[in-house]
Amino acid sequence: MAEELETLPGPYEIFEMEDGETRVLRIQSYAQGTIRIQTSEVPEGKEVNALRIYVGPSVKPIGVNWWDITSQTLIAQLMPYLEAPRYTTKEFTIKKYGVRPKARFTVEVRPGA
Image 1: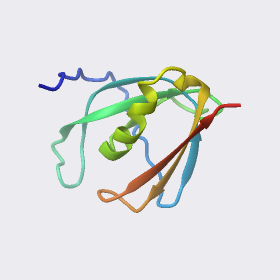
Image 2: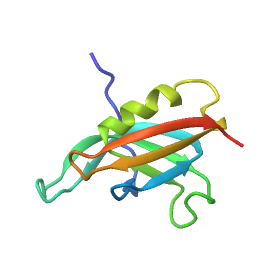
Image 3: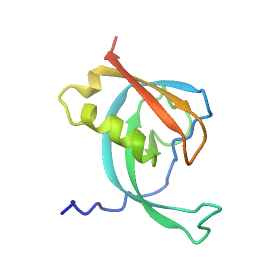
């Protein structure tokens, strides 16, 4: 049986990218949980699993220091790296292909500078 995830506290900062966009991240820490999102398909909202990644001000200089990733395929790609030792020393390059709900991502991981 899967472990029950707790609700992540707000505010929520959804990780969004445009088709073809690339971002380079240094992830300082992370948390897994659920968040409630509203979509045009489900305006009353629905609870989804999320991965909250904390980044530094050089990556995200405005607002809170985290993003909430709701793409289950991107979460599945990132988690093996985040569960391994020394993920904070690595640089994650994420590229998005397509638009939701069928968007896909590539994740390239390199030693950080």
